Picture 1: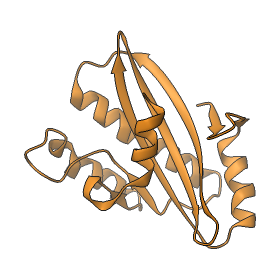
Picture 2 (picture 1 turned 60 degrees about the horizontal axis):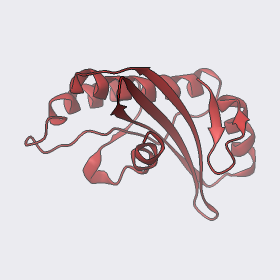
Picture 3 (picture 1 turned 90 degrees about the horizontal axis):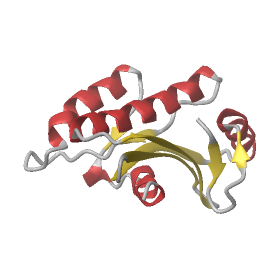
Length: 150
């Protein structure tokens, strides 16, 4: 994936950038999330990594991925989960701490279609030793990813 800094669009290496940022920011939390948007014959995914320093505020890096249109809502939502988990695993494999949360764009209310994937997504994330956050728990990363993928 090609990663960029939000604001400048500067191309970066995800793991090198995080490693350097973490050296200078000891009081922090990291959130990873993904959202997607269908337009025409393509689906755009945006993965956001939010670095939140408790004293200095937030900082975001992101990557976009454009694929042929995914008509199935479930396939698209599951791909969002996969991209978030892959990003978090890449961080861990590079010796960077696991994210504090993986934010998923799924709803705990059974009236919404995304609810049918929530238990599977949370199970996957937790089985990898990470913590999931979903719509009612103020997931910052998917809010940012939502803006980026449109």
